[in-house]
Image 1 (tube, rainbow, N blue to C red):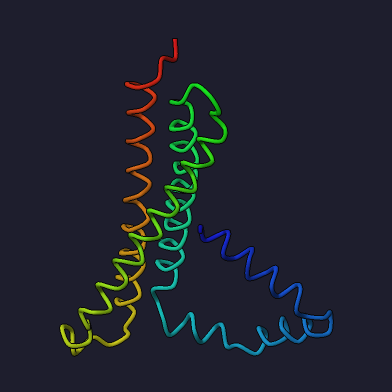
Image 2 (tube, rainbow, N blue to C red):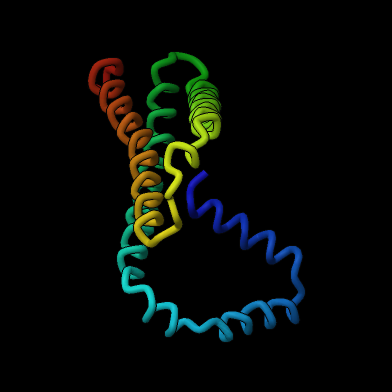
Length: 159
């Protein structure tokens, strides 16, 4: 799921569960946050925004690449190309989900707080988390691009 998909899902849940009066109090609570103090205290907030935009773009490229590689796999079959493309999309999603869950389970079993006992939540920790997120989103995007390029150039007769 991409970042935009998560935002749209969160907004749809808010729309379904809140009345107009609740929406007013929801946005009124943002006025009470001391935004100026937060931005003055933390000088790295423009870097956070840039990193989030990079993560957003990389996840967009990954999502588009996922779609393209699925279509390319579907076109390798002579009959029922659309059904094969949909099956490839679902299959790649399942494989990606299993790999992601495996990585998460491995990192949970490593007990990172014992490996890094002095790891406090500092601004650099958030930058590290964002950069690792960008990396782990860029890896599938690169695999999708290479796979699509290889299928279109070597496997499909486009002439």
